[in-house]
Image (cartoon, rainbow, N blue to C red; front, side, top):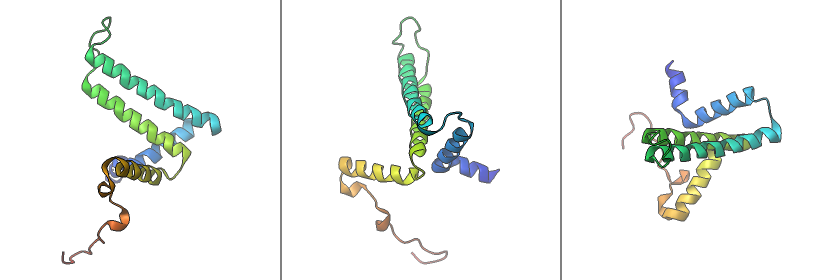
Amino acid sequence: MSDQNDRAADLWSGIDDLWAWLDRIDPLDGKEGMLLCMLKLSEEVGEVAQAVIGVTGQNPRKGVTHTWEDVQGELCDVVISALVALRTLTPDTREVFSGHLARVMERSLGPSAVVHPEDLPTPRGVGEAR
C-alpha cells in the first residue's frame, strides 16, 4: 500500500495515471479526443469563476454558496486538467513543463532565479564527508 501511496503522491506519476485512465475509458480518440481534453480546461476555469462568485456572494439570488477551500479545489482541478491536456500532447510532460517554467522564471525573475540541473551539486555517497 505504501508504494501505491508514494506513486499517488508523485505529481508526474499521478498525471500519467490519470491520462492512461482517461485514455482507456474515453470513447473518442485522435483529434476529437485531444480537442475535448483541451475544452475540459475551459470547463474547470469556469468552475473557478463560479466558486469565486459563490464565496463572495456576488449573485444576490444565490448568496454565499462556496468557501475559499472550494476555490482552492477548483484551482487544483484546473492545474490537473492542464497537465493532463499537456500529457495528451506529449509523453514528455515533465520535461516540457519544467523547461517552460524555467524560461518563465528566468524572464520574470532573472537568470539567478533558475537552477539548471548541470549547476546542482553532485550527490554524496552514504557516509561520505560533506
